[in-house]
Image (tube, rainbow, N blue to C red; front, top):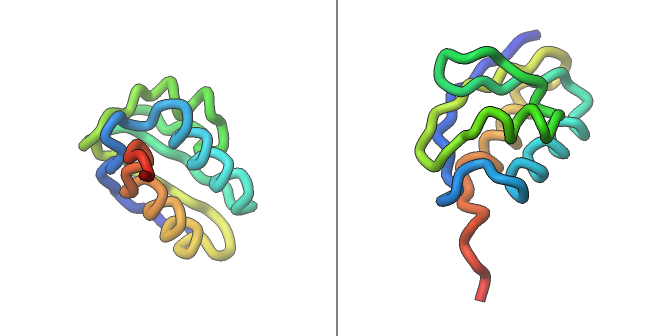
Length: 92
């Protein structure tokens, strides 16, 4: 099963080190093959933090996630939530 979703980035500073690490780790832990692409660019392995950071994804950018395997939709639900959340808000 293959699932695809387009998501708008919520972190106010984009997908820099901390949110990229959270995202890449969740993609890796999912056990499903996931790619992420910025705009119409070449997809990269979503479990690769270096690949994700190299996309230079900024706040408000749109990315396309593609997951292949059993439970792909559920994995995309989880990853979508990570990408749309602003991880740059300081908790008081």
